[in-house]
Every structure is written in structure tokens, then in C-alpha cells.
Image (cartoon, rainbow, N blue to C red):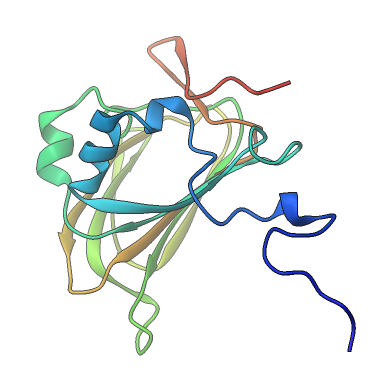
Length: 172
């Protein structure tokens, strides 16, 4: 049998992300962590600050509805429409192993002013500069919803009302 290394060890271990050490500073304040914990649990984050040359991806579990919180904070990142100068893919995945295509809840997601209600496991492709959000969990069953976002950029940024918001500067 061939030799192997465990987890992050070895020559290529730096390519393996197994925790949230790559979260940008805007996501690691006590206020940001406490706010997110009210409806979900982040699992993993990767971007070029953690793995040079990588694009950005975020993964989390949504554990309870967040619609009231989003409506109460309409200027939050997901409470008001924003766009990106690069493509993005959003995923919403049910976690019932006996019925994986059922979301186990209901998500409301707006794309350029058009409201979509999502009740099935779904991936959404967003071309560059397409306004999207609000995004909120309307109902939640007894199993979490796995949510992820993938952006084809080294770090996560967005534009709203003509202004660019940067989560983290790319390390050189």
C-alpha cells in the first residue's frame, strides 16, 4: 500500500481546509458570530487568503428561520439587493438522507426583484452584476439546511448602491 499523510500534513496539506481559520475579519467579530448563531452554524470557509490561488467558498448549516431577523435588518448583507462583478453559485441542500431532494424548509430568495420560494434542494447560478437578495429562511423542519456560496473571485466582495463592500483584502 502507498504511503499517505493525514489531513493537513505533507507537501500539499496547505490545500486542505478543515476549520474556519480563513474567515475574513468582518465575519469574526463577537457581534457577527453571535448574530449568525441565532439561525445557523458556519462549517467551512476558503479563499485566497487561506489557500493562495483559491476562489472563495462558504459552507454553513441553517438551523432555524431567519426571516424576522432579516426583515428587522434590511440593510444587512442578505437583507437588501447587492451584486458581484463575478459569477456566484448558491446552494440550498436538504439533509434528510431518506429524502435528499426535499429541502425540509422554505427559503425565500430574490433575484433582480423577482421573489423565488425554494422548497427543493437547489443550486442557483448568478451571472456577474445580477442583483440578488433578500435571502431568508421562512420555515425550517427538524433537520438543518446545508447552504453554500461559491464565488469565482479570490475573496468575497459585493456591490450595493454603487459602493463596493470588501469582506477581506486579498493577502499578497
